[in-house]
Length: 256
Image 1: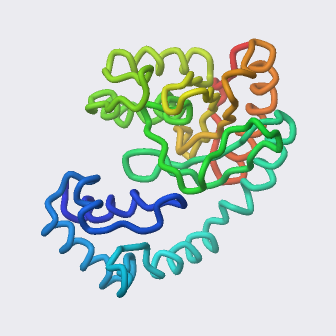
Image 2: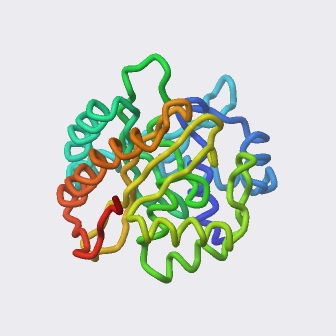
């Protein structure tokens, strides 16, 4: 892995639940020695992507990321496009709706609208979704460019739960099923007691650029509930695709 890529990947460990990390923590999580991590953090700090608290000595995301985020949103207004669609999808299904786009090797969550039910799935904005362990990831992989799909299937796959696919063969089976159905499901492969259903978001080239998904507690899932979710999810994903300037291939259909 290239040095720049390694440095930027350190930023993926930060989220709402973990806004700060010590040097030793980042070294342990990344599997990179402390001296190298410190040098990378110094480079990130010099460009405004990271900063260190002078008292705790812990590292956090820098203000430079906000500047780039504002530029990105002004040029490519993702939030304005997806938020009303997610709100409608969450209301129609009664479940948590979320959207993600490719971010490096996996998917990055770009929008979440939670269910109003007391028993609901909670997803943190900005959460990284592994391609092999989530419905969104499988849906993306199934309809991504062939060369991208081939690369994903060759990866070393880490187990996250007892049901996470950990071989290219197992993941390939899920991908083929998603291709046949037009959507992907994930039963507790990323988080216990969570069932996900996802449909690809397509780019201008007709290949997947991300996914739109609904997450529900496994206690509520049933054939009828799945059918209801898909009936709302399919048109919503098409709306997101069109809103982001993408193109849904004519042959893409959700199997009844």
